[in-house]
Length: 215
Image (cartoon, rainbow, N blue to C red; front, side, top):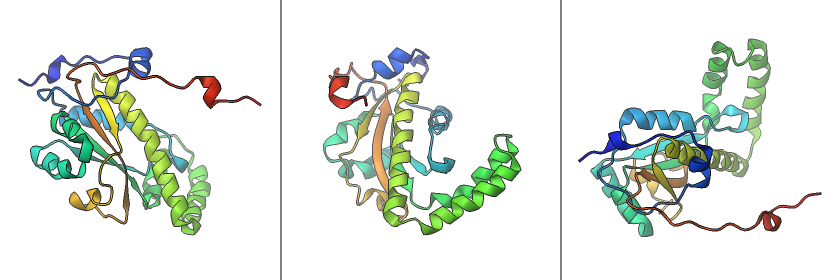
């Protein structure tokens, strides 16, 4: 039975952020509609990015065929792939500056940016990327895509779903396996998403005194 309609949304910050768990097994009867997944991704992309160029790209793996392609690449995380409603593969687009005109023009049309500010900043952004190193370009794509990945986990939880961030997969093959340009799209992580089959385990954190200092 498809139990998609039994999912409960929440705006409770503590439930979203502080009660989040990494889930290894999901209820396979729970599915996420294309409409809701689109809404979740749209909300996740409100995350910040360098010059707002949004280098993240998502591959939503939900069909049996797509999961079968992913399974041999997922190594020790196959249970999540098999039971999740979907696995979102997050990539960083190494040529994300190609969308600068579209992004800046849309900001002007929406009233978020004056046209004269666009005319000043857009040439600067393009010039910056013309001279940036490949390593720096990759750093930007990975850092910004990491921001959207965390936001995606929190948004999914607000929609009533659970997630698990997965780094254990074959990053050298995943882009080509799904027909993406390997030299353009750099893998960031997999994110399984669905309804937990059972409660996840809690985990401790180092004390703030261990990880922060004041000057």
